[in-house]
Image (cartoon, rainbow, N blue to C red):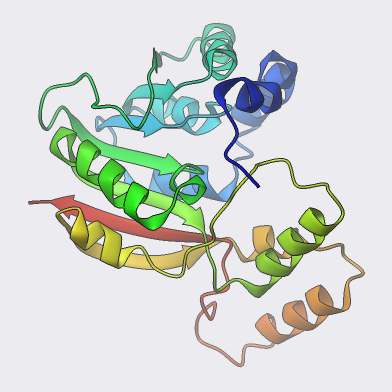
Amino acid sequence: MEQLNSEEWGSLYNLKMLDGAISTINQRCYNVQTLEMLNLTNESDSVLEIGCGTGVSSIALAQDGRKVVAMDYSQECLKLVSEIASRTGIKVDTIMHDATIELPYSDKYFDVIFHAGLLEHFEFNERVEMLKLWRPKCKRMISLVPNAASLTYRLGKHLLEKSNRWQFGIENAIYTQSPEFTSAGYTVEKEYTVGIKEAMDFLPRWHWFRICMSKLLDSNEFEDDCRQGYLLVTVGVTK
């Protein structure tokens, strides 16, 4: 399995998603990564989203007072973001740029840089180099990647791949990003998982493992999510 190129990503995220994205914004019916970024940022923060996809997270952050730049290397993704912004009247700047190339901003230009759904498409050494590249441009780095410890996500993804229904190319689930953050020069502030429901949704409702895991996690036998959330969230500060 290989990485998708910009055209392939554009076939997944494009203007066909416009009405659904606008409905999501208007109803504030956000996915787990958008909600988490609203929790982790403050009003008036300057924020860069690297690999913005639909742009819903960027639009939501801007709607709640952040100064946001949405970045992607797919023209179709950026067309979608710009059209959502135009239709909703929410200001978001966009930039077409490859995340593996130095960012065209001055040092500490952003309070926060984040990505949700990008670094998992690269190997460890590549991830470290990209994190190094981005570090001078921000005060805090927030990474949201698929959580390798999430058993329902892992099994669901495996079944989708086995039936040739996986659309996203190579995707490396990750147990911890602390080593790569440290190698790239960040101080790790915290790391945790979110998105139990989203992890469960990778399996059909009738699947025996989803039923067992749901019962187990709903049993109140544990004080936390047992690191079973779909997304691993790593927050780092720059030195």
